[in-house]
Image 1 (cartoon, rainbow, N blue to C red):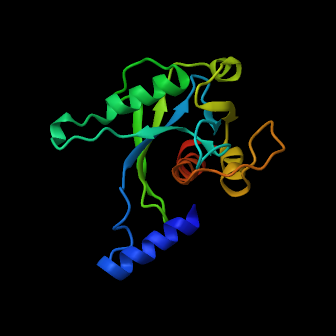
Image 2: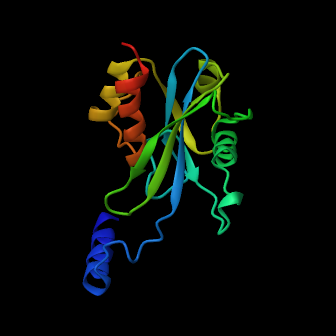
Length: 181
């Protein structure tokens, strides 16, 4: 919880002058899937205590190795895309764009956020059964991205959702840099 995180931050400041001394600081990866029709898709998370029913793009942990030559971000993105949306194509500089690095202000979690142009159709997201998301919502323009970012409301839903921290960065990118209108 945020209260626990703040208490751990204060203890870290008092003892080590470092608010994140008691945090593992794992690095995650996020993929914004773009369909061949040009829509991004965002889903409601399940199977997680902290982010249950939050809106999130495809996300997971970056593999760790003490040898930097063994770390492959494309491989980790491919793994997460397959696990969450059953996308099984190779990623490369032509279909994958680094959006940025997002840091959570309380937990010190850090995520690399990518946009991934897939060959999946919109129907793939609408008709699927998903292991880590309850359902997926399309984002097709700046207004829809901004409505999610500022109001937590997705197209086709009257519910207001919380949005994960790194997904907010992805939504900001979509609104400012990806969609023309």
